[in-house]
Length: 382
Image (cartoon, rainbow, N blue to C red; front, top):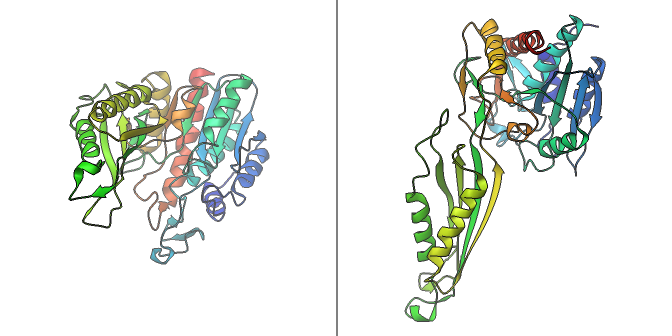
């Protein structure tokens, strides 16, 4: 069988405009590609979301590559220099939605797996966990696949997620952990009235301001080993009052906390609820707090696995990567329930941007890194 071309496969994937929750045949292409390499593939559809778990081999250790075929919307299509789903290569750079985040990583991992299989380097199993619901609500994707695999007793020993982790130059950063995230919706219900007769009303704005002040003025922590300090950010404050002489009936706000392992989502939700209860004691209306924990903080402790990953990067890039916990959330927060997980991919500067793009040379390098990672992994753990 001819070797897979990771650039051509990336182009084919980009040409399937799989904006969450649409699939547009992207998962069919991944499945067909992996089946041609000898993988046994299972489609795991939850709701309208297409997911795939594929495995080559039956023994341990099982090294998994994880990622997502869904992409964010194009935005203003007229602002792109090339059609966003045409996957054109201009001066050695592939332009298209998903070029960086992260169809290129799926293609590079598949190509690397094909080379490892051809060379007989798989002393155990290789697997792929691919979802179509990472950029959206992430409720019917990797989370449910992980739960299903756990229920079946499927064992994955280590996982590499192909998110674009490099910061400035290819291979300069690998993610070994992430902060957790909790969103909270706060609604204060008072009583509408005339501003000249405040005794007849219950203004919801002052208690909302007080609550936000109490939350923002609290220092969550000074940091955690390997992590930056946790931070709370108010993202919206809404009253919707178009009149100057009316005390409104309701005021709302939303906030997000990105937290390190010094906290859990449940502990932070309980703290917010306690602060709301304190503020509400002297208020005749009601304060409602609705938290949604989208992920807990986690860390893959440096050790044999991270050493394999770092060495593979250095083999190709010429220098060891920084092992970092910075950035937002990814599906690694769900996979950590199965096994140690790291994230390793292209430079992420243009992800979600107009003219998202990846140098062709770096897609080829990513395949090379994944090839070295597979070889080193089975030499170490196989």
